[in-house]
Image 1: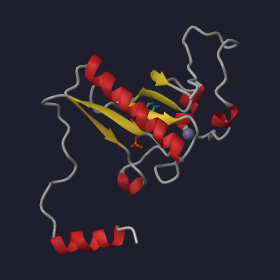
Image 2: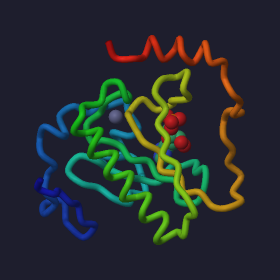
Image 3: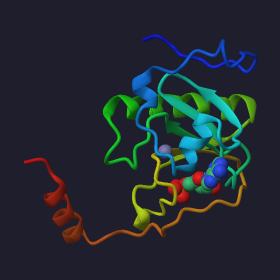
Length: 161
Ligand code: AMP
Ligand code: ZN
C-alpha cells in the first residue's frame, strides 16, 4: 500500500493532497475533521493515508493520543473495514511509542460507541492511553461474578446462528 505522509517542512504547494476519496466525506461541523484539515489547532503526532493521530486536549495520562480516520464517520458501527484496520494498526504503533519513548508500563485502547457508552465526539476515534504503575486511573466497573443463567442467556442472543 502506498504511504501518504505529510512533512512539517513542506510548503502548501509541495504538500501532496490526500487522495480525493479520503477527503471527500468530511463534516464541516466536526471538530476532529477541522483538526485533520488544519482549521483547528492540534498536536498531530502521526499520520498516514487513512489516519491521523493527535494529542487529547484533556489527557487521562501523559501521552494520551486519539487516532481517527481521515474520513468522517460517526462511530464503530459505521466505520468501514479498511479504515478500522488502519486505525487499529496506527493505535498499535502509538502504543509502542508510548512504551518506548514515554516509558509507559502499559497501554489502554478505548473506543466509546454512542452517548450511553460515553462518546462525546461523533467522529470515530480510538484513545491510546499510556498507563504508568501507580497512575490514578481505575476500572469503571467493579468486577464481580455474574449470574451464570444471565451470562448464558446473553450469549444465546449474541451467538451466531
Ligand atoms: P469521547 O468522549 O470518547 O468521544 O472522546 C472525545 C475526546 O476528545 C475527549 O477525550 C476530549 O478530551 C477530546 N477532545 C475534545 N476536543 C478536542 C480537541 N479540540 N483537541 C483534542 N482533543 C479533543
Ligand atoms: Zn469528523
